[in-house]
Amino acid sequence: MKLTDPKTMTEDAAVEEKDILTEVSDYYSQKLAQHGQTAKGVDWNGAESQTLRFQQLCKVIQEPTFSITDLGCGYGALLEYLDSSYDDVSYLGVDISETMIESANARFSTREKTEFLVSSRPYQVADYCVASGIFNVKLERSEEEWASYLLSTLDVLDKSSEKGFAFNCLTSYSDEPLKRQNLYYADPCWLFDVCKRKYSRNVTLLHDYNLYEFTILVRKAI
Image (cartoon, rainbow, N blue to C red; front, side, top):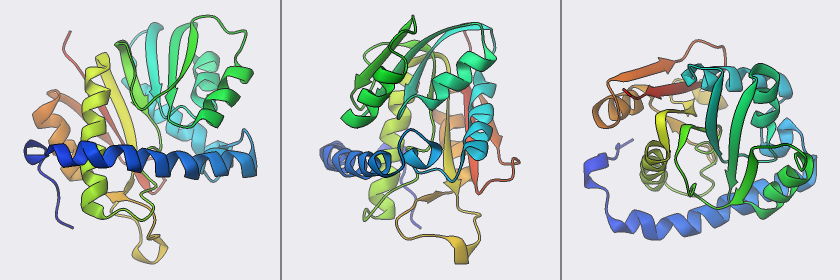
């Protein structure tokens, strides 16, 4: 695969982004309608692996009290994990699927310091910004198109976080016979290099938790 240089991205990527987001929104809305507010409703295999992903992403957090933006929040599964692990969390969930946001609002209607937003990007800066699973399903998009979309979204994560951000991707080290054409398998070394050069000196690559994926943590110097 020819990897995209983040320095050479053009406005064409931004033009394509709206169509990409519409396609992805439709895909996940169908999953929610089919499986409900479950891990499969956001296209994960099960709750156990979903929790394992949350554990990796939250390693970017370094204090008990913080604000966080969940980009691609779905029905708010991460918020449930945060409430079980931390005492004081201000939470903004952002998702492009209206049905996902409707489900999340209904689920957490009584929780304080909580907001859900139908959008592709946050309107405010939080301590942390995380994204789980939003780079996996490329559908019919080319590798090049999806890589450009991924890089532009990393910029959103960076600009929306003060202390750090974290995201996960399916790994290019997955077994070839198990790969699916509609999924995107990222090169972890490439993305580590992008984050190290562009966002922070403090970057961690987690690729040791027995799933066909990896997590990258970007901690910023305050």
